[in-house]
Image (cartoon, rainbow over all chains, first blue to last red; front, side, top):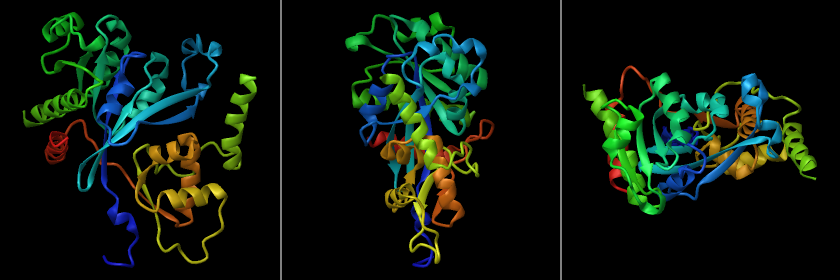
Length: 191
Length: 119
């Protein structure tokens, strides 16, 4: 394969994990704390064709006509790269979540325990589509008023969904959230 | 004049694609890796400046989402430009690792797990 071939042989294998949750819950913070590159942003013009009519409420007031996607990258092996995509928080962007979910290993749902309802849409989305996810409560100023079991109960999450506390600003904490997701995937695969 | 700005941003990228809004190929996801073919094929047609910029940026393998961010263009526009380059034989595209919801890829998961453990 020397010389004459294209450089495509050097292209790594690529996988992705989604980071979801309500607006301002810390998705980009988590991506940024573990990414080997500063989080990148790409913007997509909003095509209204993909939206239900009901979902248009509020959009006409928005100045921006684009959906922003923040993402980061972790090289997890010589030939294996993991991308982390922060998904647009609002439910009206579900059409975009569908595209993002294709080919994802799983998802992290970030939760702000002061307003957990802002992450309900994300939990619903992954449950309905059978996409494995963990729930990570991102403590405001690193504080955690509720233990994981209380959060699990309040959200009526099944046993196989791991619930953990994190501080998305901390690299090791964010890494541990990703590891919890992969461990959950491995445990499910081993069954 | 934020309205004018928004319009300008929306109009310009699609002017690059000759008004096309759909890629001619569905080969590109956000994490499809593209790589410039080196050396370029003989009699490769001259592209637009954006085509040349893409070729420079993907001299080494790079994901579509990263290209879009580096070019400051919407992914949908970059995909159309990449379709041109793929059809002209100027780039190769590598699909992301296929993920099945029914059959888990334990080897892959363990590799990811090990990589994260080293962080």
